[in-house]
Image (cartoon, rainbow, N blue to C red; front, side, top):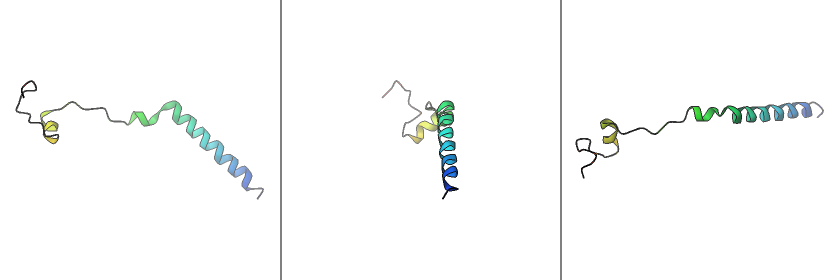
Length: 57
């Protein structure tokens, strides 16, 4: 039981450090996708006819 307390304390300290470092660097935003503009090829995927001009309906 006495060996469990230092190990538990170490795990908690490491988890807190990892959390604080991840908040500081915001690594998850580095891999987020940015919204794309519609190319004729991607417009077809969304059901938009690329042969029509954007101003016409």
